[in-house]
Length: 112
Length: 115
Image (cartoon, rainbow over all chains, first blue to last red; front, side, top):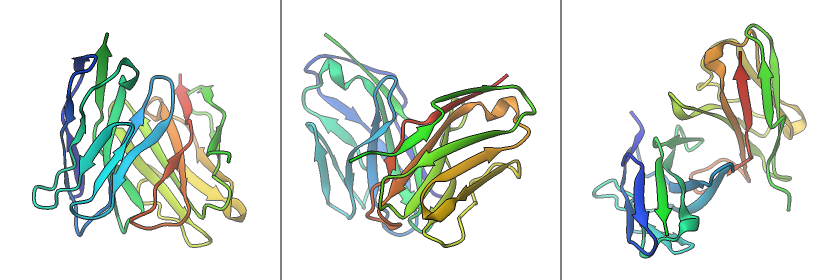
């Protein structure tokens, strides 16, 4: 069935470290892929998205590339900040492109 | 412009009571979605509305859950005879229309606690 698998957290990094959060998916067809972020006490916000193979989504220094051959959409950032501490969710649109299928979420904690 | 709004932000109820959760989508968005975020199940789809079409109810966990959307805008999610396992954050989202390239914009959620 359709699913999203992302690396378990928590991920703990020092400020300015490199971040990778792995995400792989199973889906029929070629779904759009998303990363959402949930900051402490806040709702889900779209971080970035990609709608077709080899597309790169980017925002706020974060990047992710839609890799059809490996069914992956790994999130990366070259230099994290304390303000990046949040829970990150990978997702794809499924069910006739109506419903988002989410991964379990990865909690990131960045320390000064 | 204004984002998706939900009310109440928090709701505490007793087991067996009915609750209603409200969602106001972004103006002009024709598609509306309900999701649930709980510790045990993560984020899961509940129901989807597109304009005046029949909703996709495939994610509703039981017949105690129902939702309606009046006038193609505001939506209400109703949980009858609440159970403790219904405790979760209920999220509403909207998008300009349904489709694979459309971004869903989420509201802040309603945190439901069933005692």
